[in-house]
Length: 608
Image: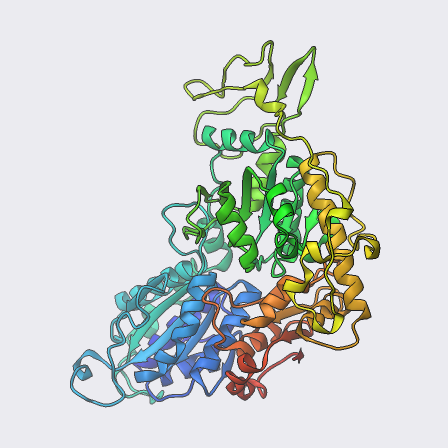
């Protein structure tokens, strides 16, 4: 786009917009107002940016949030000075808590009009508290080449911080909101003057913006692979030596759901641990990848006997904990050793248990666990620990060697992983635990009370309420006979409870919220984006969503768990996307009816 030299404000705004476009910006949501006129004109005139006007600031902010969430790229929000920007606050909080890249541009009055009741003026510095990844108030526009360079680089930095965040405790990105406060003096419209004439010869766009390229920024700022330290090797070894572990897949909205689900499947297959998959996780919709998938854990754990028998010694939970209060109470009571896998710097353990956060992606973890595979074999009565295919990219500590250790006694000789690193001690007795004998899981232990189909609630679906004579074959045909007693108990319980739930739902003629979720899990076209509102809908999906292979993509606002902007976010998810669906309750829907103001600019299809 040609740079706009009509006046200082026009030049300033066009430099800002051109920088953003070259970095990868494609969408800007514009709210009405006078003070933001230079920004509005610059975005509207750029041929490669879709500038969408939205009247209501709160709806606009959640619409932008939805677009950014499904695209994984920052979306710009623009508003005028005064209280307009305050209406963005709920969306800024949600963006921070759920790690969505959002770039908020609030126009402001210049310093000389602050604190003097000049009108439509509030203190906009740090307007959103500590929620932005980064925030700054820029200088008042000046027709000076050095100040234009300052503006350009500030915008580059803002884009980087929105895309990748700043996480000193991890090498992985934490996207989120960034706030730039932009003061403008009059004249606000693009009224031509001569102040910018000297800059026309100094500013050569191709040279000035040469380094502002999306690919260059991405390559330079993509985090390096997390280094595999000896401590991580020992943690993985502990997992591989345990048969009483579970993997919990919490709510997740990965940009590449198949890779995400494959990583969890690989982890489960290698460790032979069941995967307890939350309804808001894509894992439930990639059933063919996870043969040991457990979807009815909330119901299973309501049976005290089964809850006691299924107590784990180790837990890996991916991301945040599922919504299920039953699962959370069970973990709190059991107090197993837990590892949280998440690349962010957030504390994701509200139970305050015996937890260690491993700041990495599950995709990277799956690779390491597979490459550090331990075969539990017996050779001449002695355990054989085999560490194979140990491969670590960009290892900054000593290079680890592929080691094969044969234990000649119950306690193997310690072998160092690289000179100077702590020894890896192998206790052979730990490889054959005596306490992993199966407790009998007899069908006649599942006593039944009457289960009324027309009054189906989660409390009525407890495993001790299931009639063994009515149990049908497991709906997850991918479930395989488990070779480990602990895993087998989980798989048997899942098959029985899932069969009873499906049987009851099939016989039920009355439609209620839970059956709506159950039906959607089977009726939606493959890969349908589904936005799920907070309050009861997310719980209906948690309790009743049936596992399948539909690759349906669940979307939701579980950062702050509010009902703000439900419709607007769903419209953002569906904008220029394939046909989408929203599952919502009455209150969440009515709370955001202003979202319908977007419909004239909305491009797509949303079924509510």
